[in-house]
Length: 225
Ligand SMILES: Nc1ncnc2c1ncn2[C@@H]1O[C@H](COP(=O)(O)OP(=O)(O)O)[C@@H](O)[C@H]1O
Ligand SMILES: [Mg+2]
Image 1 (tube, rainbow, N blue to C red):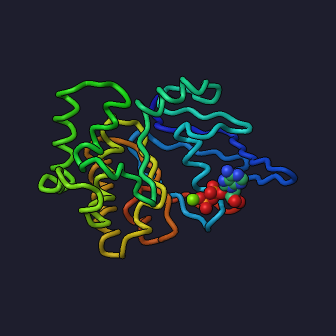
Image 2: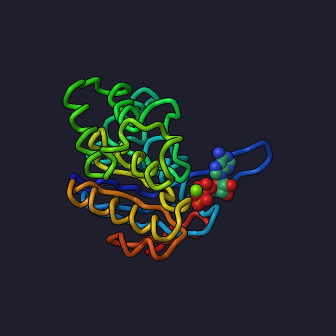
C-alpha cells in the first residue's frame, strides 16, 4: 500500500452520548492514490467531516484501520498523532480559521513554528506558496483585510506548508460564490497536481466534482462509488 496516500479499511465510527449512539461511518473502505483528488459528496450529517477527521488523525476510529502513506495510524497515541498531523496531512476547512492577529505570511509560517522550525527554508516555501496563490502583494495583510477568496487561498497555502502526503478539504468553497469557488478549485487542482499530492475534497456541489479525478458518495455513513 505504499503507493496510496490513504487506505481506510472497514472503518466504523460511533459517537456515544448519554443515551444515544450515532453511527457516523460504517464499514468504510476507501483508498486514495498518491496523486489522486477524490471528491466526497453527500448530504449534511452523512459523515463527511467525520471521515476527514479520521483520515487526518484528528479523530480515532471505533473499528477498522487507517493508513496514510506508509504509516498505519490506527493505534497511534495522542503524541504520535500530533507529530503525524504536523508532518503528513494538511487541512482546509469551510470556515477559514486563520489566526486573526497574524499576517497572511505569518499564518503560513505558524505551521513551521508548530512543527519543524526550519527557519529560512520555511520562509522561502511560504513566499513561493504565496506567489503561486497570487497573494504576494497581500502577504503582509491581516485576515480581516482579505476577501473571502483570498483568505481561503491563505488557508490552502498553510495546508501545503508541511508538504503533506494528503490534504483534506472540508467544503472549501461553500462560503464562496460560484465564480470564486471555481477559481479556488482550479487553484486546488493545480497545486495538488503540480506537487503530486493527494486530496479529498468534501462538497455538496456536484459542479466541484469536475475538478476532481473521482467522486465517492456518502449517505448515512456508508460510502458508494
Ligand atoms: N462530536 C460528535 N458527537 C456526536 N455526534 C456527532 C459528533 N460529530 C458528528 N456527529 C454526528 O455524526 C453524524 C455525521 O456527522 P458529520 O461527520 O459532521 O457529517 P457531515 O460532515 O457530512 O455533515 C451526524 O449525525 C452528526 O450529528
Ligand atoms: Mg461536515
